[in-house]
Length: 358
Ligand SMILES: [Zn+2]
Ligand SMILES: [Zn+2]
Image (cartoon, rainbow, N blue to C red; front, side, top):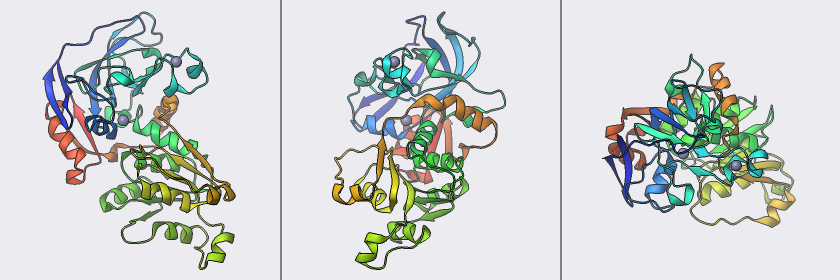
């Protein structure tokens, strides 16, 4: 079968690889009908974690059940399913506590030997271990494109919002309008916020943010984003003394980039008593100004995506309350994915997400 494989740092290729086979009665083999390139794939090919030459990439996908293990209940061959990007057993202490990404048998498709050594989904077929937990039936009325992000970036965006404890009437600031920031923007709308303020330097991304429900967008290269957020939420302080008594800011600040400027801005833009929710992937250590944050009573949450809300997200999409298809700026055959990787890595042609058809 055809698959996109890691060759060496910064190099991927289309290759012929053996078709996966069942290894356990807990497995399913999925015929992939739509997959995508994710920011994590780019981190992997840049060398974020070791990959072996020939490892199949990709972890965001939907497909049809081709083979099904005898331990998997409630599914049949031919069912259309959305699949989680992470693998979890559903039986260990972490799984039973609902902390799926820390399952003792956890892994991520297509992310190399340190993350479960699982072949990825940028392929004609993929083996899904512990399929009972990973798979969710796609409602009949939904297209593959509507369900594509449920197992990865949409779960991450939803996780960012719920981790931040966003409540009705709150103002939320989302730093970063990449795929995850845009998913967080759309998910924030589900909680009836008073303001959804999105910060990003790329105009095209801000335009999509507005389509997905941003009430205000800020280009940080043109204006001081923190000051602007304070202006929108009660007024920015005009003196150092006022700074201390000022109570404006976002109730929830979401970091969806993973770099110092947005990290720092989240803590400056959040209101006293508010929450900073971090889903950006950081390559460098960051510093917290504890003396300032402690007196502001700031809550901080972070973590790897927890895919526990996939069924809920599919219901929300089915009800017409969430539509992430505007993120798909490009669709191409899997065979052209090498070009897609270059386009996605270099952010060419206003790309947000590339859907790949095996
Ligand atoms: Zn991903
Ligand atoms: Zn587990």
